[in-house]
Every structure is written in structure tokens, then in C-alpha cells.
Amino acid sequence: MLRSVKEFEGYPLLASDGKIGHVTDCLFDDRDWTMRYLVADAGSLVPHHVIISPDHLDQPEVGWTGKRFRVNLTKQQVKDSPPLDSDAPLSRRYEIDLAKHYQQVDPYWKSSVFDPEVAEHEKRLEEIAECHLRSANRVRRDQVHATDGEIGHIDDFIVDTSSWKMRYFVVKTRNFLPGGTVLIGIDWIQSIDRTGSKVNVDLTCEKIRKSPEFDVHEPVNRDYEGRLYDYYGKPRYWQEPDGPVF
Image 1: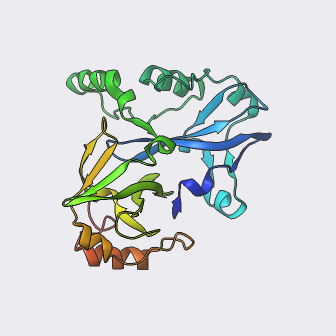
Image 2: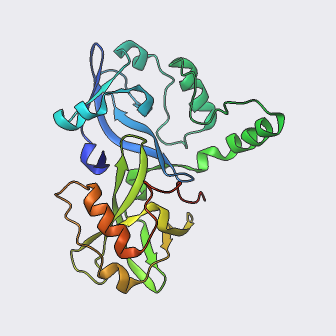
């Protein structure tokens, strides 16, 4: 199911024995554009934010219907989780401590087969991993550039809740469509300028301007996706391997 990330901010998080708090943000990995954590304000439980892996979300379709997420953890487990410094980058060391606390058997960064070279490579990745976990809230307002000019800024993301992959940017195109909004596939990214808060896509302004109309009040379904991909002449992600990793 495809859903707006902005939509579920504010959703309550319900543990097996009561409310934990509410969603305030999400963290995603900009190498493969997968959502790794929900960020929650748990002020009634602990005096700091907590992060919850989608691995702990129970039956996410219930959350969409009732505007809430059920979590297969207890309030005490969340309360005893490692404290999170909201002002510091999220390090792999913290993620390891969190995975141990919640007894995650197979965290997303763990290789299924041990190989010394792979282990060394993963160790190096751990040293830089914090550079790739990004806040959806902070990425909003990042500028989006076509091959021939700026087209607007990121306003939201559309995420696939079956895999937690980010599938689309929702882009406000104030530069040439006053008040207009378009969807641009994550796989169509040409490059990312992290220091300049800019994303480049391999599409022209004119091509984007004439793309199938997107209504932010309507769900993104496969029929619309098919028309969008046919219009751009792009291979459909549901029929092809995932796009390149930066």
C-alpha cells in the first residue's frame, strides 16, 4: 500500500499494553531510500524521543484505517530503550544498542553470510552510516532540479508500506505551476547534493509540467502509477529490480 509520510505524522503509537506516544518524523536511508525508523514523541512515558523500527509495527493496515500504529512492544520495553540525543546524528553504534535491547535477530545492516571481506566492508560502512540516515522533516524543502532548471521543492514522500521503500517525491512546483504538485519517482534521481540540499532528476521541466495530474487528496494506486511510468517511458519498479543506490 502506498501512503504519504506526512499523513501519518501525529498518529498514535500503541504498545501491547497502552499508548507510547505519537509519530513526529521518520528516518530513511538515502542509499536505498528505505524507511528505517519512526520517530515518536513519548513525553508521557520518557522525557525524550524514541525511534521504532518498522519491524515492530504490527499489522500496519490497521494503522491506516484507524489512524494509528500498533507496535509489538510493551511500554516498559520502550521506556528502557537507549536514550536518544535528538541533537546528535543517529550513529550505527546507537542502532546496534537499540537492536540488542529489542532483541532484533536480523537488523537491516546485518549480512546473512559471514565473509571476512564483507565484514570489513560493513565495518567501514558502519563508520559512515550516520551520514545516510536522514530525517524526512529536514529533507522537506530540499530543492529539486530538472536537467534544465529548478522545478520546486520536496513537500512529502510516498512510501510503500509492504517494503517501507520510498517510491516517490511529492514536489511543489511553484516555479512553473503555481500551487501545482507532481510525483517524481525515487528511481529517477540522477544525483544528490547533500551539502546543497538539492536533488537532481533526469527529466526536463517541460516533461514534468505535462505529467499526469496528481491529487494530494487521492491515494496513489497502481492504475495511476502505470500512467505515470508510461508517460515518462520508465521501467516499472514493480516489474524491474530496484533502482541504483547512491
